[in-house]
Length: 328
Image (tube, rainbow, N blue to C red):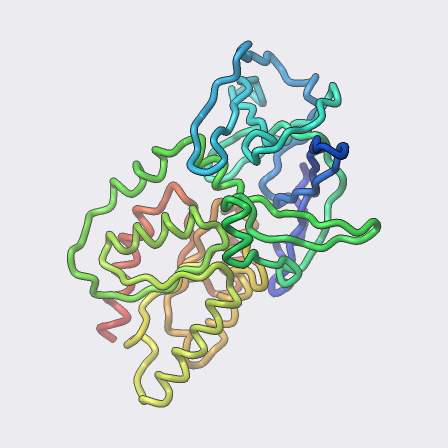
């Protein structure tokens, strides 16, 4: 899919979400459920019948997950010279769907991983503000099984679009990836530094927080940029009242880019424009770091930018930067 200029627009706090759907079969009939993913993660949408050199099994290979029970890999097929897995999104979400005969396949790329998801179909692209993406409360998050990061109310007709945590899907299929990344981090016994991590994906929060803790940080986590900003404002008030630099309380902020209420670029810009908070190193850590996003991160003042495979380098740099801000 063609990339849009929205990624270059600094300060919009907006994103383009592609709406796909699954036709779920229930006792009272078939119901169309809307789901969303970031357009920037989508490489191509093809028809199921157009998959090249598809190779599947009579009995689907089942990969165990922690919540829904199974995430089915239907087989493999060739895409742009690579062999990639075809994931049954309905099985990952624990849904029974209507087989319409020729469904659609969404090919995605993030965290340097190319995968494909079998769905019922695709509706349209929505340009939305991150503040219109409502995060799930604790009870709803448990119900959603950590698969949904938030919801958007759509009109014409009225419906709810659930935005998916695709990082969780890839993590379910490759549970050893996070362990391999963390195994490269040298464990430090003393927790000498303090960090804030904002990420709407629970799996990514666990990865970042666990990695930083292993590297010697005490980590406070938030599920969106707005919550992190509120905490930073409180910390700033304390620093001002006690006449101490903000780096006496906090040495690092690590933020995802895509988040409800306030995205990582907006959070970074606010920090770097604040006379008290601007001395804090701010890292952007995302499953999606393209040249366009690197440009936008630089324009809002991000200190460093990383994707998931670079987590060990992030921790190494974090210790160096934290030591530097503490020393003055």
